[in-house]
Length: 192
Image (cartoon, rainbow, N blue to C red):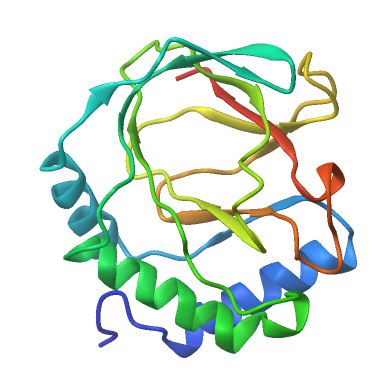
């Protein structure tokens, strides 16, 4: 029986395949089955204990206002289950994707967001430049539409499967030789 939040051969293989696919197809995001139901349940229990605040309803990104309709714990402390998750992700990436990264992967930030039913989500944006190599999105419960977009108007939206149990992987600067704006996909969450 696999231990929870362990860099198991199955997780390493899933990550290796996902990163190879992202690099080979030159896409900015992929999704793959990754977490067991027990791992998701442990993350939910941990997330429910975190201190949350209402996110600013609008922020400026790329010269445009971005709507934010969720509660957030940011930065989420790297302790308990979150520390195990972060350690496991770093270990899995080290074993599976080092050849796709320009530097050692270190999970340098974590946020836990809670979207209420029928929330507007978060508008089209790029993640911060300080995120290097990869950005992970892990949905714990519920349904939404995570999509990468061609432009800030949301055109050409391509849905990324963020079903609980999967991990959505977004490119960041330093992945597969990518740098600058083109390394970071425009993306949004809506249809909560």
